[in-house]
Image (cartoon, rainbow, N blue to C red; front, side, top):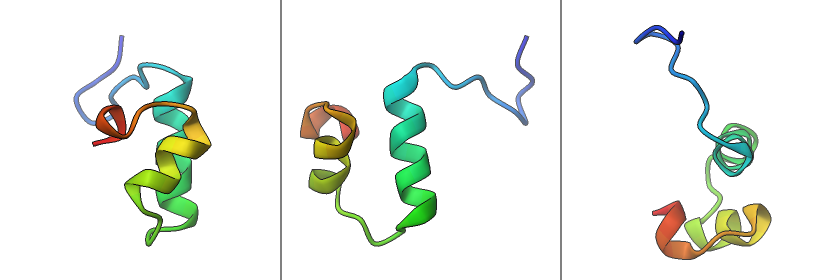
Length: 44
């Protein structure tokens, strides 16, 4: 069970987006949606 300090990553899309933010904090939501293969609204 995930603790409040270490929440469970829900899915691969979330992990891809979080890694992109970590690697490139200036990445746009549009870039992240393309990279993760999800809609812009989902990234938002």
